[in-house]
Length: 345
Image (cartoon, rainbow, N blue to C red):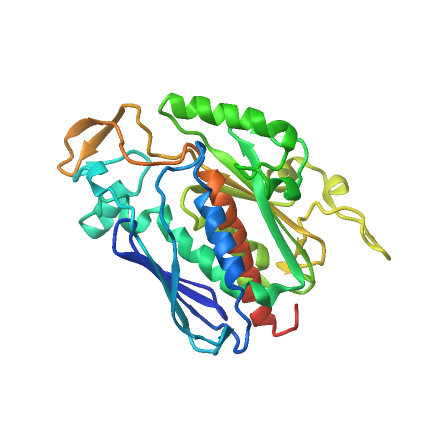
C-alpha cells in the first residue's frame, strides 16, 4: 500500500536511486495558503546539514510542485510534487546480496526481485515526501504546535526535555547537558564501523480536544500505525507507555479537577479521542542496518556469504527520523481535523 489517510490522502512514489521521489496529496481544502518557507525548513531539517552525525549523501532536495497550487494557495485539487534524485552512487550496492536487517530478504520473496540500488522503494529516502506533505498541510493546524527531538542515543537518555534546545542542536538533542555525550558516542560508533539505535520524543499541544474517532480510527491507534510505518521504527509509547503495565490504577489514572487534569499519564488521549492535554509520544528506532563491519548473510541464490556494506549511511537513523516523526504526527492530526470537520485553526 502506498497511500496514507482518510480525509487527507497522501500517495507516495519513487525509489532511492530512481529519477525522483514524489507524492500526490489529496483532500487539502481550497484556499489554504501554502507556507513554502516552512516546507524548505522541514526539508533542510531532514537533511540534517553536513555534519559527522548524519549521512554524507548531499541532495539539493528542491521540491517541484506540479498541480493543486495557484497563486500560493491550494485550489482544492490534488497537489502533486516531485523531488529529483541527483547525488546517486549505485555502484556502492552490489547486485544479488541480501543485506542483514534490510528489506532485501522479504522483498525478494514477496516480489521475486529486489532493487539493490540503495534499497529502492524500502529506502528512507521516501520519507522526504512525507515531510514535504506535512509542510503543505501545516497551515491547517495553526492552533496546534507540534515539536520533536532526540530523547536517547543508545542508552544515553535525556534527563530533561527541552524542545527549544532541540531546534538549535546538530543532532536535535532534547537535553543540552547530555548532547556532548551523545555526540561523542556517535563518533565512537561511526569510527568502529557500527551503528546505534535511538529514541525520538514528539509533542503536540493546543486545540486538540475532540480529535480522533472511537473504535476503528482511534487517534492513538492512528499515531501508532503512522509511526510504525516509518523506516526503522520498532516501537512507540504514548504517555506512560511501557511503564503503564507496571503501575496500579491508583497511580496511573489522571485525576480530573475543575481546572483540568492533574496529571497526563494517558498521553493526552482517552477512548481514542484527544482530551485536550498535550500528546506526548516516544518512537524507538533500530540501529541503522547498513554497517561496514563484516556480517553473515546469503546471496540471491541462497549461498552463504560475508558482506560489508558500502555507501553513505547515518550512524543513527533516529536523528534524521526526528523530523519524520513530527511530519507523521502532523499528517495524522490534519487528517483528524478534516474528519472532525471543526475549526482547529
